[in-house]
Image: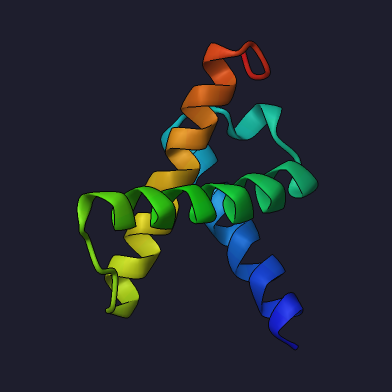
Length: 82
């Protein structure tokens, strides 16, 4: 059940990050889920490095979306998204 929850939340996070970064038209469902999951991991790793403890639900969601947006930015600079 936790895998299903991870995929659903990852899809939502990836979708919201793609809207923020204006790559929504270029990304499909699978890309949104993958970017959401990987970007969330990136965001929580970076938040831990700078000492941010994302304990609350809203802060955790914001860190996840920020990490996914950062991942989209990195992928755009690498030429994956134009």
